[in-house]
Length: 287
Image 1 (cartoon, rainbow, N blue to C red):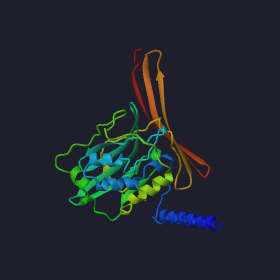
Image 2: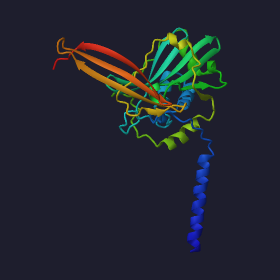
Image 3: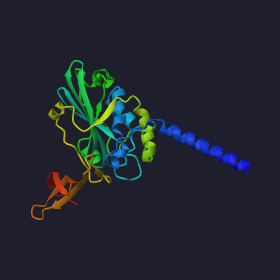
Image 4: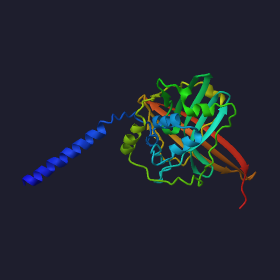
């Protein structure tokens, strides 16, 4: 009996130590606004961007299962999605788009990294979470860091520069990449907090970069995203529906596709709905 009791005491002691080890890592979690947002910690993304030599290296580290920053499964198919990196530029402003191809001609923008140059050593940046995934006004901004000293900044703002375009698309991935199963959100948070140990970035709810308005960029959303309901920080409830509808005109034979995002916010009994849609018309494909 004594032997069993001793073993139980030892087991409980080990479990207590393991729990303390996890809890002592000082895991600071900012409540995300959606289930999908739990799959990509934008502070960890910012750390990868800060340390990358160029956007190709950043794209690789972002999708590296050994690094473990990407835990997104937007279409809920049981596999982590590949995030490709695209870029738009205008003079001294850059917008880097993190985008998931979910099918042929179906894309979901997850976040943008926005950088502006104000002077020789005066740069500003922020990571903006896409509204469908993170809710409205979700930003990650640097804290007391010298942005101009990052290797990737010198690479992006060199004299002769062409915006980066990922070579990968739906069904075509790097040879080193294989899909893997997403981990539980608690495991993911402990994993990413190790990447955020430098505490170089913080979550904000106001934009700090202004020149990106010069860059031609329109967020892309897909109806294939399965996880898109969240609670906003102000206590109201916001739901976002991404839709797609195809209509064929019997007279003209033309096919019209309407893709849009409807955002409904309810607070104190008042409901506000905004709709953003894009319509394209083409000849009906022949069978």
